[in-house]
Length: 371
Image 1 (spheres, rainbow, N blue to C red):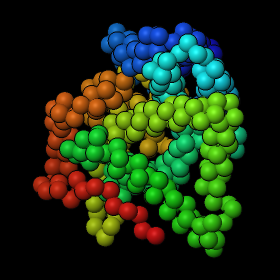
Image 2 (cartoon, helix red, strand yellow):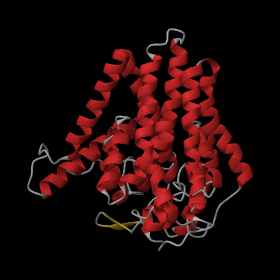
Image 3 (cartoon, rainbow, N blue to C red):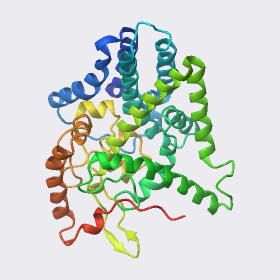
Image 4 (tube, one colour):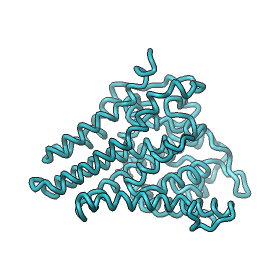
């Protein structure tokens, strides 16, 4: 099988582009099409497509991954045209009412959250300056630029500990998690970058602090929305961004819920292992999310390109009962989520840490990072 053919399923996200264009032009009840496709249709396809537990050779050279990487590189201009084209058209269309406009940008937020932020996550882990810039541009379009700093400097270092805001605690419902993580992630990202500048003998306000780039890019996108659609255009850009951020944090909530690294004393924790992330091998949603659900291997090898991420068995890493589309919908209903996931967390604890009897210290809310 050729590399092009093997990469083709991961291009499934491209199907969302014509759908988004269609709902922008049509309006009406068609605005419900995007959540119907991304949340429900992919969940249905997963139930029929089954699991993909096969692994590519992790030593595959980069030269053979061109068709996999290309989709993440071309996504930014496509998303840019999609969102700002929609702002231009919608703010000039007198036939659309407010709910239709909201529905259009809700759908676009699903696209920029499910695909755009996910692709930026892949790009920010690469060494190429171009790929990292693409990551920054995608994140700036949803006003969540600090996610790059938080993810690289905080989350990967402190995942599964009280110092990582993103690691959802056992019994912490999403509706409590969400407002907490919005504030704590920004604060921890800012402090991490300020600490980085301090280690290099520079103040936090030094021009090399990436937060200046983050703010400049976000201001640029906000200004463009104002130019194309006035304050209404800016409003719809913010609606799209809000939905995208919500989608991201739903996924973050699912990925590590209740999983903790063992405290070794003196503020130290065991090394990150595959058992510290939830995994899902559902075939279709892994195509859409470019193997994001193989999350244990991502934390074990953060710079490994997505087509080479390895699947783990249930003995090596905990498995979700369904793919992310289903699990993120369940996360919005905390009683159902706890009924589904708490027994799995308790089983994980018995399997991996039978010596720990008191888990109360591992359920604390995230603590601020030191200055």
